[in-house]
Length: 210
Length: 83
Length: 57
Image (cartoon, rainbow over all chains, first blue to last red; front, side):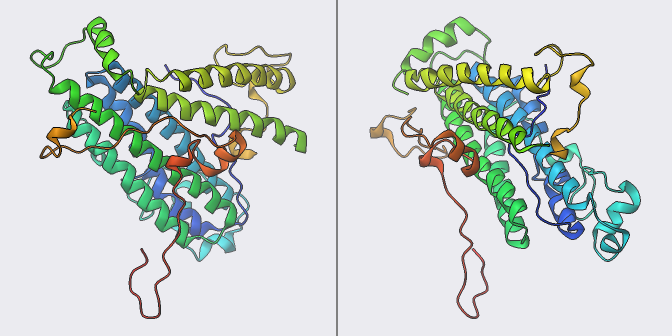
């Protein structure tokens, strides 16, 4: 089940009031390669994973992505919290403002609302893990574009943190891909795959060197 | 919001982050003994930090993961996006 | 690793090498860097093209 810890994962500090930047950051709140997309993707894919450690990894990274989603909403909020009407009027943020005011809302920087079409779960662990690795790279690239477009030091610090997390997640999904491939193509596997936890546990002795 | 508040919180965040990293590492390396030792050591420190924080400011996690003084502290400001 | 070295490379299989547990940053530093592991720390350095350069990577 989900619980809530009343802290951010990272101390977000925003150094300016900048609605135009807020509109850009919204890409990671409701965009195709954003944190909501990532969180939903991993938490949806975790049901059909053959190894318990794959279910654990997808649950854990999915949960972390929701924490990142919260960070992005916080960055957007802080950028517009104190903005006057004049500051909002001449920026692309005004289109978000007429609908949502100062409230962060999951659409991308062009205003396209979030959709489940941004991710998939194929009941094919190898396809799913490859999608996850691609998603982490796309998110990293988006953060790099955002960092270049922003001159707010506090925002860039938070964006750099989020970018580095994508790199680490990519590595973890890559490692899990190896384990899952090993299992899917091993001689012990029967038809599709089975939920025989005891057998899976004993097989993990061969991973002792890790 | 005093400087002291932020220091307690940053210590907590730093510990929590290290634990997240180790958690993910252990998910893909379940048989790594050293990583597990480090995780458990940090988890102990985190327990203490959580207790200290809850004592000062109220529950850190909802739904029963920390007691509250009177009146109900969970609703207190600031919320994370206001800090 | 799945494939013994004598069988590398097997076609149509992606492989990401396993990270080995080694050094870690002190935890306050780790939070601000975004990772606990120096092995995985890859800070972003935007490429500055020379005059007339089109690409920013």
